[in-house]
Length: 160
Image (cartoon, rainbow, N blue to C red):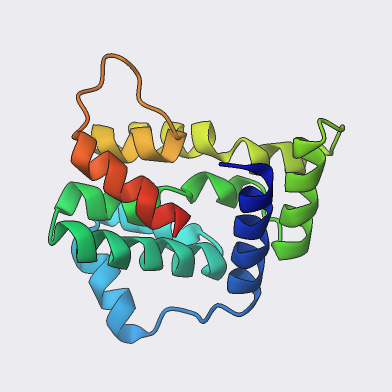
């Protein structure tokens, strides 16, 4: 991704975050029907902006793959590590800029930028599907058998 395209993506995501709506009862029921109780607990511990983003990613995954349960779970849970930082949209944006510039930042901001491994560890601890753990981590470990079609759909849905 070119720098300009990446900046455009981040700006678009920022405005999407600050204008996002909480999940309504129908969407909440949908999430609870897809996730096991321990996974749903992690989902609902996220900030509402992350719940909305993850739900929207899951909707795009459903549009491309249909009812692929593993892919839908991965979409819903891919950002659960962000809950370890408790940052709002502005501080998240500042952390992203400082990280891109390789500048020092507070520990809480570093946790936000390192949310992938944190979330993957949380998901592995509850026995989540390997696709879900890998997508939260942001990478596949060579020992993991990951469906490439599902992986590509998840990446496209998250970056849309």
